Image 1 (cartoon, helix red, strand yellow):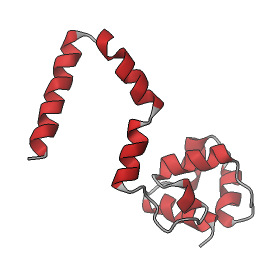
Image 2: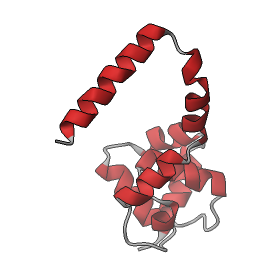
Image 3: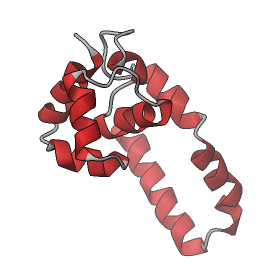
Length: 116
């Protein structure tokens, strides 16, 4: 299956119209149509990344290097812990208001309970 068909399949599975997807990633519907129809062979890397984020699929899946559209749980966790936003959040945590820290503590306790 080529990249355009994979994108269309994921888009339709998520119930997203072509125009809506185009707007979500900042391109024209015409360009989105060319991508899905296979008319546009080369897709800019930033557009591939945006598509993978919106469609919740790996770039490898979109370009046909993997048959698994989603990251494994381990890969997903690895991506999460290496996210620059998470690292920024962790640095700013000490500056967080006490009320927010209490709420965060409650969420952590709920997550720990769910694991039991």
